[in-house]
Image (tube, rainbow, N blue to C red; front, side, top):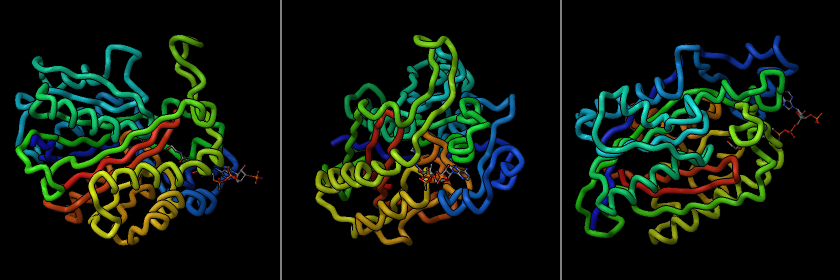
Length: 323
Ligand code: UT7
């Protein structure tokens, strides 16, 4: 059986760090409120010369380096983003060009904060279908460009950044002892559109628009939706929370992460948390968290790793990977 095995990871963050206290003169908020309600302490904010394409390219190059590969080895780039450089062409194609890659194919995926989870499952199916052997899966975002900087209920929550994985086709035995992507569950439900959306777009206003969120409403649904897809993934793989080595959740709010882990019975020391450092970077949050935990030696070859995300749409999903 063909398995999509992780060969490398990489990350890129904008140079500028914005601390919670930096918001205190801009909107009515405090470091204490932000830290207590979300777990966020800082986020990176892109300068004019830092874009979804440039950050995505840097993360992709880092992932290729860690895999010992070059762009010539890649057949497909899947970029998860809701903040593309342009309405079209796809930013994935721009990254392809920046990498000097003029073979293969590249496209963007739009599932907001669940984008990276959707992109990993898509890459896995392209590999299993024989259309690609090595795929760069990137999550890259510049949410700072779509924030309403006068709205304290949203502007303090998000940050910019990018993370990437290289997935490669390998032969497996078809059991969960294999390395690679093992199980997945994806969901969406457009009935929740108005709880988290951007109030502009090419076909409606002709503008880019700003992010709008009813945070409390999103929070109310988050834990139930996250645990549903994770339980579906566990039952596909025939495992329980006790079998996991690492839980790498979407980094939106430490309270959502804690409540989900508790409901699932995942021990606190198995949970990778980077929301304090990066804020919510939407589709970049899971690969950024993965890169941190791989770089500091926590996630090692053979570990069973669960990825999860939930966001605008709503969209939500989980992927189980043996590293
Ligand atoms: O990545 C996509 C998924 N997104 C999420 O997962 C986000 C989910 N939602 C959340 O993380 C939380 O709901 C928030 C962090 C957005 C808000 O936390 P909360 O505990 O749900 O607070 P709340 O919305 O119920 O607001 C409590 C109070 C309100 O004041 P009143 O009405 O009680 O007087 C808000 O106006 O906090 C106020 N507030 C703030 N105060 C200081 C809202 N934002 C701020 C702020 N600073 N930045």
